[in-house]
Length: 396
Image (cartoon, rainbow, N blue to C red):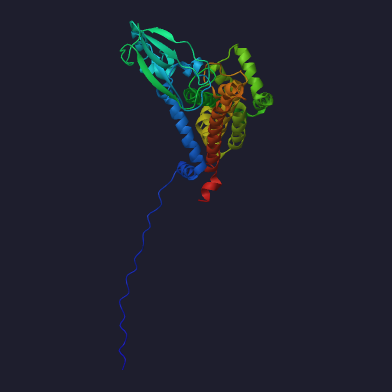
């Protein structure tokens, strides 16, 4: 007879407690979407590197003279990787005092007198002189030797303790004035990012104010401001910058900053006006009116913060447009003036040399810098647009 099967006691029901998901702010999902977008991150990294170079400025330049403008006619249009030897004059006490670290960061360091040389030797019968052979390009007519008196010179050159000798490598060659192309290219990031930042700040401040007033109040205020936006929108940006420069009767770095900023506020104003028109009848705005909140608080504390996403995306787009506009103006001679190292001005200097061996890289290098920086801002703008899209967030 088969034994009856044994039954094990049933295990008590155990409820599995799943901890609730942590609350996430909308900004968390925006950051997650942005970091997942590799082109946008690559653009952000490149922009960060350019910003670091712009902040460090003269501290990291091979030629830290004001505007990286220390040039030598003998060394003009030399190819990348070119090396030259120099002897240098003694720095005076007043020059050392003037070249403090903060002034160097902002304005550069006063250039020390230098001379590119090929060789130097003792003058027979004169213990205080050197016979210096100035540097000359290979294949060109050698320059006459110079009898250099050692007074006011200092350093270490062969057996003469009064002379300073050093070798410098021009990694990206020299321009038509014999200036270090790498130093001017790096310093140009300060101008390009600076003009983009100032232009974006001016356009945001002016555009948000005009757009918010037009969208919130409507009526005749909206009609007048919309007409003003339409008129400004119809004027080409370059023509408007020229008119502003003529009105201010000046050309230069700061005039270019302001002029470019005053041409870009219409884009911001139109976006803000449209968003405010759709939000001014929202429930939270009506509740604020019932509570008696002032209009300025409703606009700046409740309406505009809800436009954060579109404004950030628009700011990156305007940043790229400002860099391109400044480069175009400088190329035409209407923006930043020499000897400031604007990328657009450097492209113009290289363009004038096209047909020569040096013209290719003197045009290509600043043009490539402009293209990479503008591309980075466009990639970042596209990534931010996708990151702030609610539909994209909900699908992940």
